Amino acid sequence: MAGKGFGPLGKMKELAEAFKKAQEVQQGAQVLQAELEQMQIEGQSEDGLIKVIVTGNQEPIGVEIAPDALNQDAEALSASVTMAMKDAYAKSTETMRSRMEELTSGLNLPGM
Image (tube, rainbow, N blue to C red; front, side, top):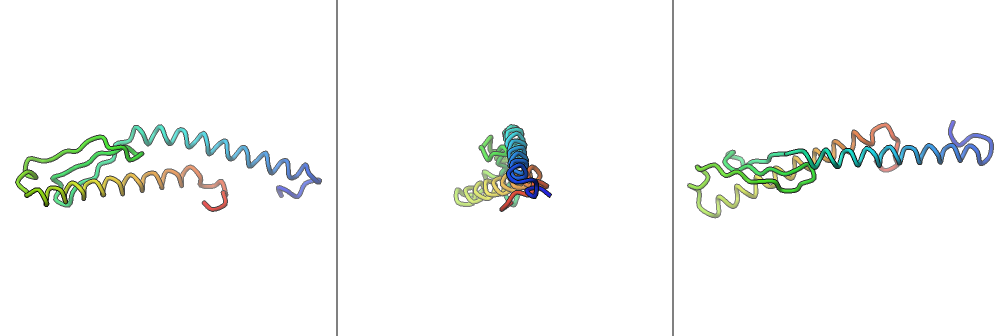
């Protein structure tokens, strides 16, 4: 039972455990940050003619436009690019969220 020790010593142990957990999360977050920077996440338009590639940190890497996409008018092409960007963003956001959950699971952090 943490915190139920002899006077302030019990609280010190609890505080030391909290610091240890914080250090573990910080180290894990640094590793995760590096992993996310190396990831390539692809989003695409509904018709698959436009692809947008971003890192796990949502930094744009590139856009691929299939030749058939150029047969669309400017408005449709713009809508396809926007759809692909939103898809890449959503996938990247979900990847970040799930990886952070993995990192913090089992730590019993308040609010997580």
